[in-house]
Length: 294
Image (cartoon, rainbow, N blue to C red; front, side, top):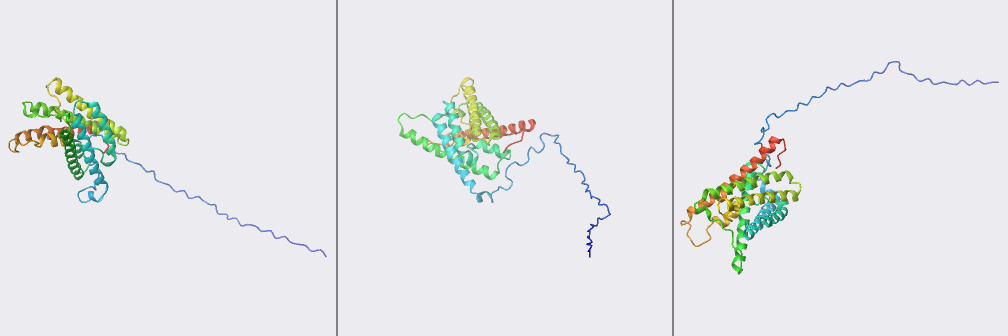
């Protein structure tokens, strides 16, 4: 008896409905790029830390290291200037490179009130940080003067401190103008050095070269055309500690007029020159399309 096996064939049901792929249409995004036709637009926009003020700055431990760095750096710089003065500008340059590199990571190595005020005017640093830096620089210059005086008193053949007494000798405006021009040159170089602040060595070399150029400029002008020698510092903190404050037994009232003249020559006009130097650097950067560094 033959048995027949019927094979069940399974047939897959295929849907007869055609599948239509859904295509998402994305609207093209058009980016509008604002073209700055005015190269000076936004020139006075704040560049520093907007959140830094008198209530927040002391909550950051970095500010204490920055203040200490400004004190130590200005002290060393004042010792360098008091011992070498304007006689050895190349030695001053090498010493300034080392000092700037040493404190660069702490505070940015301002070490000079004309630099700090220029940075404040161009809004690279906040007002409270600038004030703290200037106080630290004055304290550092005072420490440097104390140490230099101690060695001078103890030594038999000590080098004399730089003499800046030509203000009251009928050459007030000549000395003031030369100091102002040197401060402007140095302020411009320092602001330009901020473009290379990623490298401590490049930054320090640029700053030191700028100071040396300003120093050589003052030496040539003062010695060849004005018959003055060793009458400039290009640093209001150092000048204030040595030149302006009375160090002799004379009463304050007797030399009040000379102190006012020295303030104008060695503090006010150098600070104005530093501010102008910073602004000149920013103007040239804007006109050339270069990004202004803080």
